[in-house]
Amino acid sequence: MVLLWENPNPNNEFSAQTLSLDLSNYDAVAVVAKHWSDNDARRIELAMVGSDRMVLTIQSPTDIRIQTLRLYKVTTSGIQFQGGKGMNASGGTYDSNYAAIPLQIFGIKA
Image (cartoon, rainbow, N blue to C red; front, top):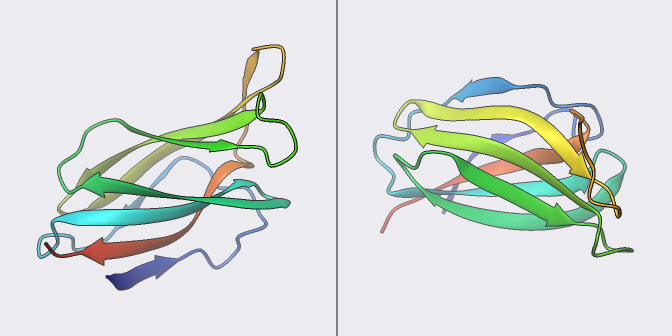
């Protein structure tokens, strides 16, 4: 695995954006993300290059009913992240760019 990108502001909001990365020499990526901008619970998500509509879901460390998620697409030229979403304990969802914050992206060769 090769570190390709690291979030310079991991405690700030992360709006919908495309990270331009040359992924043409990689088979997959590992996306490391955290639950919330001020909550360091982490998850590693693996996705094949060329994957469409992957879902990054992270549970709260204090209440498994509370989750955050962010959809993303991996192409040979980068990763397109949509805005984050929060899901509360009662099942409601809301938009939040403080949810499911990407921290690092690693390139993986098979």
